[in-house]
Length: 213
Image 1 (cartoon, rainbow, N blue to C red):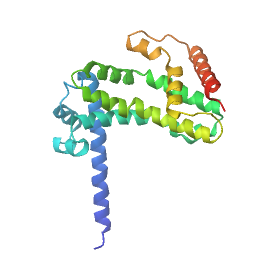
Image 2 (image 1 turned 90 degrees about the horizontal axis):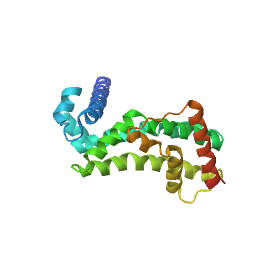
Image 3 (image 1 turned 60 degrees about the vertical axis):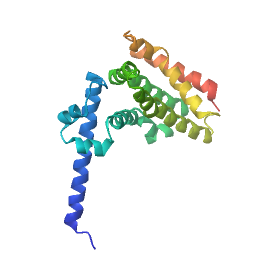
Image 4 (image 1 turned 180 degrees about the horizontal axis):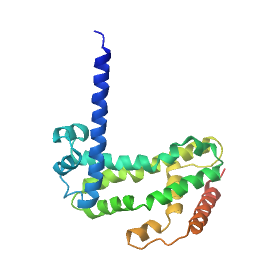
């Protein structure tokens, strides 16, 4: 049986509407989780905010934990997108790492990311499953993506990395330093653009000193 052109268009429209609904639910869940907390946010709240139905939400995410995990994974993909830019790999190693470091520094210290981190820490005792979900879909996923990049640079002869995951975590630690802890404690980061630049330059220099080819 041949598929008609109208049937194909109808199928594509359904997929488009489904993806639109999915994006709306993720956006609503992200806002509600941060504003109300994981425990206080119901799936009914998400549907009321985003539109659609509970049946659609369960079909798309499987439930509240699946929805939370997908919210974290979406943030992770945005966070790590700089590593997928073609121009990053084409740059010299120090320039590439500097660009990655700058992206990580600003992204990790952004208020949205910190708010989500605070949410997980505040609710992990009552809902321990979200801690594992957050770590797997967030920090560990970012470490893995960066580790893959560093392993590729080693294969190209630009780095000498034996354990890519260890190297990835070392790089992120050098870039973040104590700043994330200060932010989580409510202490503002008072740095000029020049001071941030100097910090990132030193972080890249130290990393290359440790892992340079």
